[in-house]
Length: 425
Image (cartoon, rainbow, N blue to C red; front, side, top):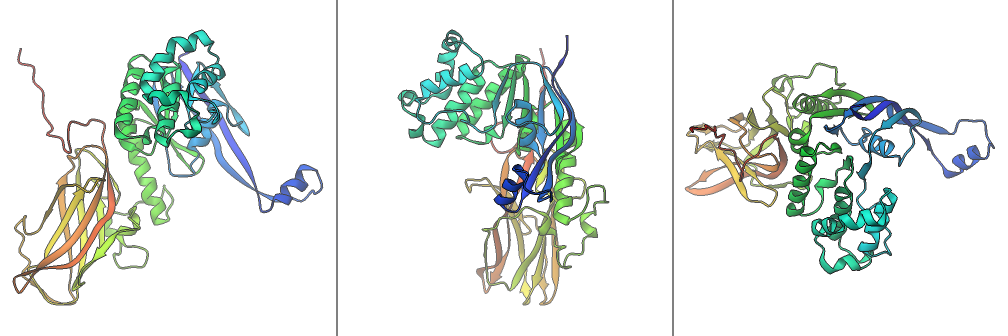
């Protein structure tokens, strides 16, 4: 008996890109022998296996072929070359609600989807109450789905897919939608699936979820399989790809340490390697100006992604345009709702700078352990002080960039106490 649920064998997907629709038309009718298209490989010779009972994640940058491979596995797309072998009944969440008839009621769509998956009416009847309880959309279940809010639509689509009792569940970014309570319910169902030995194949940009739930991770880049293996190792490799692309380098080129980067060389600012907020709030009198900043992981790389329970650094570079007495350098980390989670400044840390003369620059680095829970946060920078006993803001960057904390174990609240459990009796 095979232990393999999904086997992807040298799969390639080629698209022909035409400059004009008429070129496609002429080629289809054989009216031209001239090649009027460009070849684009969304996937190129990709192979991997998913064992029964495994939870496998697929990660990669946009355009790496993640969604394409899921569509080929589920039969939505055909491979140009190669093959896929699947052993087990699949339920797929590729585009939530794909296959729903907008004119049908929610109830009618439940039975429609069940039939499409090969279930009889009696088998859907047996699962109906679980689906209704999970969706929790009340009387709207008897209304046409075209009248649903996006939240209700998501709830019903996920409820149908996950409660139809598949042997293999395939999910493409579906857990990033819906409110926080619905997401919690979905993750709880994930845990239940894992305990019951179901096979899960998921695509997600949420590296925390990948690290927490996956037994193995497959990394794609520009249509090629880069590596597969333990979540922590593959997530780390993915971070290298993100940095390499930001710097315009190939992955196999030596990645520079942060101190090797010429700070003021055009295109070599630390912050240019980070994913920045295009709508950052930037204000102050600019007598002292923040000209660069960085988040640095425990391997000395600039990145928005920090592994929980590792040491990391926050660095800022400030240029002084006037003499300033006792400047104060600060950073603040907030959640996505704008609540201050933590932060510090050089006054709290009792660092005395004296008077900094005009024309000077200062590079300030804060080093600490990442004990925040796995999620996304916003990072702000500031340089302030006092002029004639009045508080002065020289320069502030509010929500300059994000910090994504990658975690495979979270506790309650914002940060982890890192408790050790001892059983005494």
